[in-house]
View 1: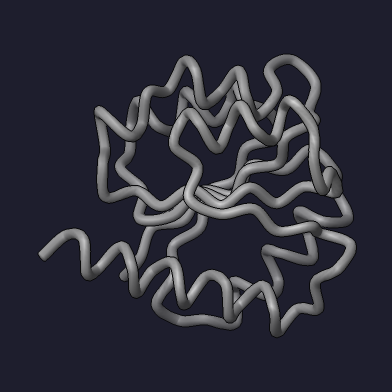
View 2 (view 1 turned 30 degrees about the vertical axis):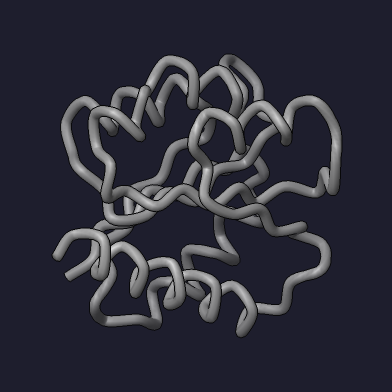
Length: 129
């Protein structure tokens, strides 16, 4: 089983990703609506993959990345930025902080999301060996 943390403030996207991920029997999914909730989840659990939005209330994706310190604390956790931002300072910052990949949400079909997740989980498996 793979443990995935979905960090997304938009309810419609959270629901869509939950449905997409729920069709996969080998995923256990936790959900956070902002970076602060995501930090709380990360204190209690280790994740194989984190799908992280950048622009959120309370604590944004960059703030989460700064506070979580995941590349050092959990080097096998893959972090995929799922944002409608295609460039900018915030995106550059999270990539420097250790995010592995960026995908523009509005460009993705459900099958694309599954393909990205499968590819990143494969990379997580390889790095854990």
